[in-house]
Length: 190
Image (cartoon, rainbow, N blue to C red; front, side, top):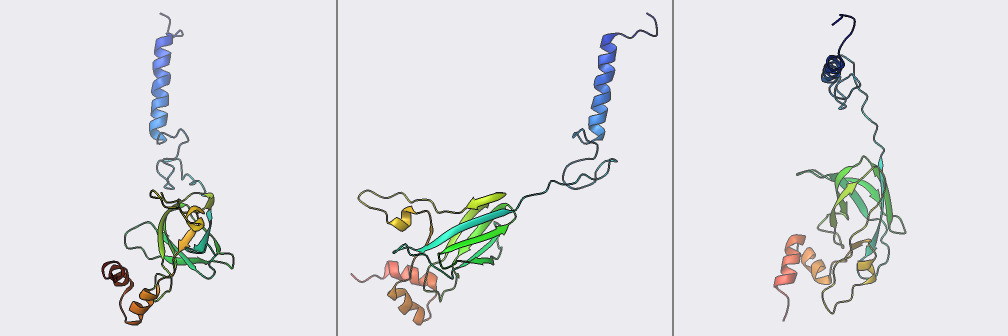
């Protein structure tokens, strides 16, 4: 066989080996520069990480009993992680709505003051926020037989319940809210 003529099988093997070496040197991306995690990796220089669009979110807070929008309610978020402290991010408007913008991720949304001296309950909700617009709602509860759900329960809005006069009485005596709930359930008059 003449040295100027190569067999097709040998050419295919050489081509495959060349591309395998090229892929190994470039981190498998074929772009020469390592992984796409912001580190420079390899000898091809750094790769610019993709930009992330912000997550904008909106929701509405209403009274559990009357469905009336609640104004001035604090909304706070924190990353979904043990021990994280929520940071206030918005307050509901006169129409009960709240908007905020953050980075996409999994968050704990806290609606209400979380204070034992508040006259309303506080909601703690897990929310996954994606890039772009997020309309935040609560799921509609499943009604037991012979129970009709209220308009507030079927609206998808965040619902805060006013604490009862019994809770106010316990609060005046200095009992923590956790004990108030337990006392209301276990020591009801017959």
